[in-house]
Image (cartoon, rainbow, N blue to C red; front, top):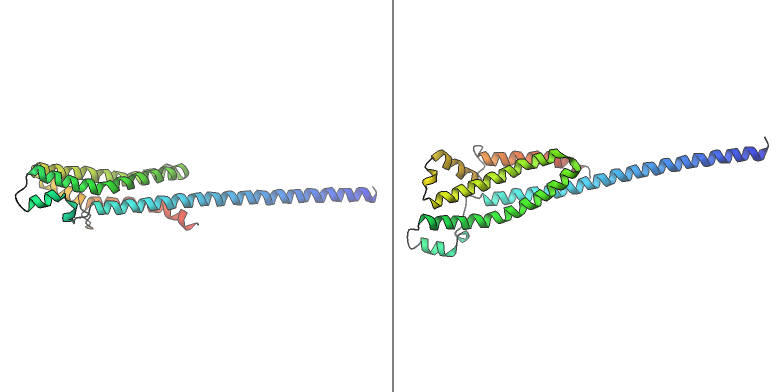
Length: 205
C-alpha cells in the first residue's frame, strides 16, 4: 500500500467522521427545535386558557354580585316603583332584565373559555377537558338558579315557600365568600384544578 492509498483511506475516514458529526449535530438541532416548538405551543395554549379562565371567573363574580344598583333595572321600573306597589309580573320582568344584562358577558366568556379548552385538549389530552367541565357545570348551576330566582319573583314568592330551597338559590346567585356558599366553593375548587394543569406550562417558558 503506497502513500496515496493511505492518504485516500485517511481522507475517507475523515469525511465519514465529519458526516457523522454533521448528522449528529443536525439531529440534535432538530430535536432541540422540536422541543422548543412544543414548549412554545404549550405556553401559548396555557396562556390563552389562563386568560379565558380568569375572564370567566371575573364575569361570574360580577353576575353574582349581591349589590344591584338602581341603574341596572329598567328606567320605567324604578319610576313606577316609587309611585305604587308593583305586580309580581312587573318585578319578575325587572329582575329578568337585570340578569339578562349580567349574563351576556358571562356567555361571551364561556364561549372563549370553551374554545381555549378545545385547543388545550388537543395538545394535553382528556384530563384538562374534564377539569374544565367542572367549571362549566358551575356556570350551568348558576344559570338554572338565576332562572329559579326570576320565576319566584314572577310567582310573588310562592316558589320559595320551601325556605331551604329559597336560601340555596339566593346563595347560589350571590357571590359571598362564606364557606357555606356551596357554589362559591365549587367554583374556587374547579379553578384551582385548572390552574394545576396550566401553571407548569407557563413556568417552563
